Image (cartoon, rainbow, N blue to C red; front, side):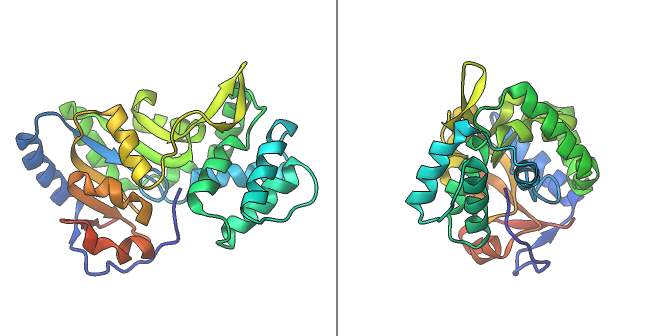
Length: 266
């Protein structure tokens, strides 16, 4: 999941895709077991598939009773007033997030486990419909495709670490050739074949992105990392080559804390 964006570079050196590829060749020659790490929303593609899915979820009044108690606890914990059941609570929490009265890390986790009561096959059908309606394929950033091709041709693994729900990220990156075992994202628990109203794995937000990558890739020799938001900063700092892609104002504000950060021209 992502933040609002600016066109300015904030003084970060601007580089082309070919510049990145040249740097990757150099870094690959000096790394024992290197990988590439990408944020998803706002980085690999324009827009946010997690938001797209959750907005469709709300528009269709698709929240189920299994989520109600957890949503109510969440609303009470953050002083979000709502009358009614699961749909009203999910809507109120979303509105509070938009108004910056509900923290991003909790909101992004909620947008995954609020699907409690859904079967995974039901959810896959909704995800596919939303991706198609939102023209997801056309939103993938062309400047990154040669970098992904480079990784594939050289056997360099690609990992995707996102704060969006895993069930939408898996399907969104499948067309880019990223295997499910190389994805970390907000992952609800599953019980008796249905999603539960809680995460089943640690949250993938901020420093949680780096910890998730460490679990997936223990060597953690990251040749390059790509991100657009301030909560990608920790992930970017793990890389020999940190790359900002259409950076948000908040990422620009902390750019000085990320040594060697460059801005990819998209």
